[in-house]
Amino acid sequence: MNHEHVIAGLDIGSSKTTVVIAEAVGDIQRHTKIKVLGVGQARTTGLRRGVVSDIEETTRSIKKAVEDAERMAGTKIESIYVGIAGEHVRAMTSKGIVAVNGDEISRADVNRANEVARAQPFPQDRELLHAIPQEYTVDKNQGIRDPIGMIGTRLETEMYLITIGGSPAMNLRKAVERAGYHVKELVLEPLASALAVLTEDEKELGVALVEMGAGTTDIAIFHEGKIRHLGTVSFGGSNVTNDIVQGIGVTQADAERLKERYGCAYEPMVDPDDVIELPSTVAQGERHIPREVLAHIIHQRIDEIFSLVQAEIEKAGYASRLSGGIVVTGGAAAMQGVSELATDVFGTGVRIGIPTENVGGLSDSVEAPRFATVVGLALYGANRVAVGGSSASGKRRPISSPNVDRFAQRVKTWLQDFF
Image 1 (cartoon, rainbow, N blue to C red):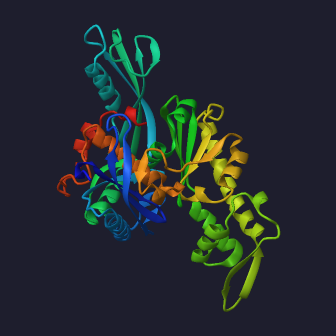
Image 2 (tube, rainbow, N blue to C red):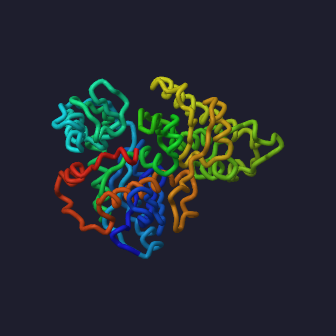
């Protein structure tokens, strides 16, 4: 195993913290693949809707998940790629215009145009996370993907800037560093998931990635190969669990178990004769309910979530432009009936996104929708190693420096290759 190529991804969700340790393998330049070496998971209650609400609890879950993954991988890690998401994420399009120096456009001209587009004044409480070039215009010719070598006098770039709340980012870094690890880079979770579960063709044709977490559902729309829109719906799998608690009168833990064992998101799929036994309590004794009752509760809530997602897609103006359909991923996507219900609501092709492409090693231990983000983070790290970034075994920087990642910001080789 080449320690230079070992990377780690960390996905802190509202219900589980997951870590994947992997090795970047394969043709490092174009087709970066990962070999999964270890996976670790821990329950967490320290996060609400993508924001750290309890640093101690979050730190504890990070420590446990990383230690489990390290044990399985038989290697220690020092730094880690961390996913971030939530309602504090904002995105905007920015333009940068420069005059071309020579006859033909050089890499330096493109870099200057990108710098101009990036140099937006952000409020004090915002932090730039990703700057992704979408397309270029040379003189009056629009929609150019790579202008290097073209003849022209004026170069314009259109860039997608993604910013995050400063304090959610600081608290996330603090929790990871308290657990004893260095944050290599923060990466937007829907973009990481897209790396793990979307194909190039889907991104080209137009696709919406719907990531159903416990606390929120994130949406990322791709069209003509680039990210075009990001959105968040503030409902997720834990709302389904709460509905079951209210509707059937069981504890949170029992509701979670019933959802996992008997849950179905599409009521018509359930046999009307199916009966499930509820956990008995001293006061209520034995209880049974038709499985349809449980399916009805789940169907109603997930239908509502998908309807909100559909409204977000329409608001973004992409409702009729998603020839690649909808890809549903995240923990809640593993439930029976999710794709059938999604097909009903979106009226287009739907598939469940499972990270299998470019993943080797212990790949069967991450073959589920809930691993999309964390596998994507490892793939992102592998791409970083490929373009000359460094690995999880890199030397740790002092924890105290506030601009820990100022250096990483400078090195951000434009992520157009990935997103």
